[in-house]
Image 1 (cartoon, one colour):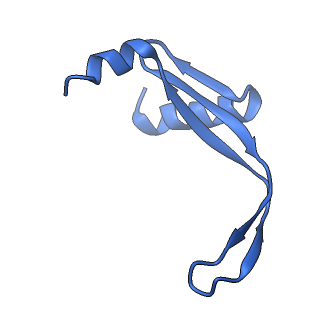
Image 2 (tube, helix red, strand yellow):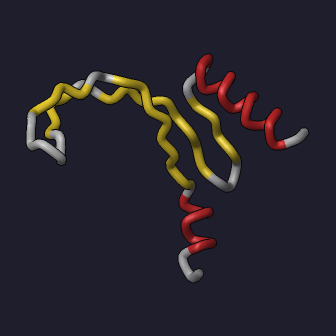
Image 3 (cartoon, one colour):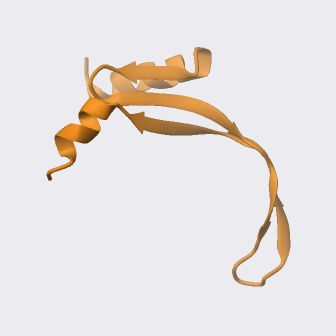
Length: 70
């Protein structure tokens, strides 16, 4: 399987199940971020930031331990 096909499969799985687990590496997951009030850094004006879905990644402990000494 090439890289593009792998990414396409991950996107399809995230859309359907919302979690992709890669053994020994970590998991990708869709989480909903709540809407909130923010500030435009250029003008200081308050703006409303809408709710959205975001992909998060959490590495497994074994992976973190392997790269801790790098």
